[in-house]
Each structure stands twice: as C-alpha cells, then as structure tokens.
Image (cartoon, rainbow over all chains, first blue to last red):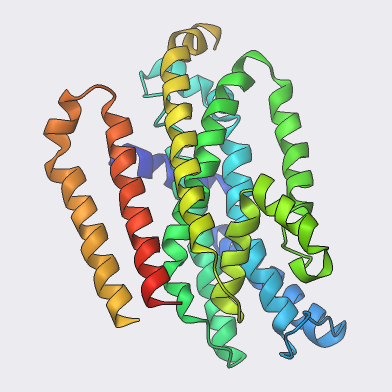
Length: 255
Length: 56
C-alpha cells in the first residue's frame, strides 16, 4: 500500500464522517470547541471545580481537556481499527490491499482530528493566558506511542473480529471501563498511592495521560515509564503485524 | 529547550533518513517491517532520553 493510497483512505474517512451534513468539515472544528467550552467554562467558572494542589481557576478544565483529547484519539483508533477488516470487506474482496497496513489510515484520520482539537485547545490556552510547560515539546512522541499501542491492539482485535463479531461490542465496553481507570476526569491525588501505583502498572494509558497533564499543568513526567511504554507499543505493533500476516489467508477466505 | 529541539531534530531526521536510504537493505532482511519498527522505537527512546536530560 502506498502512502498516497493510505492518505486517500484517511481523507475519505474524514469526508464520509460529515457527508450529507450542511456544515460538512466545519463539524471537525465545532465538536472540540464545544467540548473545550464545557470543560473550561462550565467546570472551571460555573461549577468551580478545582484540581488538588492547583490554584488556577481553569486548572481542572485544562486537566480534563489535556487528558480527554488524546483519549478520544486513542479510543477511536482502537475501536475503528478493531473492526476495520469487516468494515472494509467490500474493498478487500475487490483489491489486493495489504492487511497489516490497512488500519494505518484510521491512525492518520484520527491524528488529523487530534491536531485540529489540539490547535483549538492551544488557542484557548492563549486566550486564558495560560502557558504550556516546556515538556509540551515531547507531545508528538507521546502521541506516537499511544497510537502505536492502539494500532497494535487494533490489528490483533481486527483479526479476531473477523471470526467472532462479538469482539466489536466487547471492545466498546472495555474502552468505557478503561476510560474510568485512566486519570482523565479524576486526579491521581484522590486515590491511595498504592492503588495508583497498581493502576499505573496495569494500565498503559495512565502514565501516558499523566504525561499529557504535565505538559499543560505543573507536574513531572515519568520518562522511564514512557520509554517502557514505547517498547510495549512497538512489541504490540510487531506482534499485531506478525499475527495479521500469519492469519491473512484465513481472514481473506472468511471475508 | 533549544538543546532539545535541535537534538530531537537530529535524532528524528537521522531515523527518517535511515528508513528512507536503508529501505533497500531492510527489504532484503527477514520481516523488514519489524526492522523499521525497531528504528522507530530507537528514535522514540533516544528522544525521550534527551527530553529527560534537557527538559526536566
């Protein structure tokens, strides 16, 4: 599969998402604007929600937005990738596309949506006169790690979904549970330290989300955990690639 | 910050150049995609190690 073809699929994915709507691609901008409005204005100003240890009025809103934007990209990539072979079976039966490379277009499409959301978020931070931390410079690499992880898991689940359609529903449910064991709406300070240590060890998105928080609010990034997660994400992606290659013939026959 | 930006540019442009110019050699190896993944992992880990030294 050529990069041009992958990009074409990604573009089609973005166009199809808003096809038939009067505002079209403008929805890609409107959705994050409304989400950020709810987080920053409603939680910060109206509900006066405060983050433990942070005096900033908008601290909790920034905390929510900086964790939620990457989570949405991760969750969408994982859920879409896990059903990609079934969703694209029409194309797969007509054209000999590379199975392991096919879900990459989902990563591209979700990355575009994330970049739009992040751009609006940075604009909101400028309006609030809140400067990000210098660690924000590592954001592209942290995003790359989480998307590699989502793609690796998505590849394995996509093969399983071909033979057992319940996988798609199970993935949606697991993502919901996963959201609540990740420090996105809750702060690590509110749970016992021993429990948070266990959560950090079993949930790869916990150190990743904490890293995003430390990019926009005072805090430290656990670089060692991120390096280990980079290793895990690469191993997962490698395993997914080998698994799809091994099962390619069966997947094509079954589809 | 400047040290990180310049170092990260060097590491990642180097990794991209390795992937681009080494694609002929990699394609002759067993499982070339895994070698490419290894190069990406190395670039990420080196960038994070650089960030640990220069940004924290």
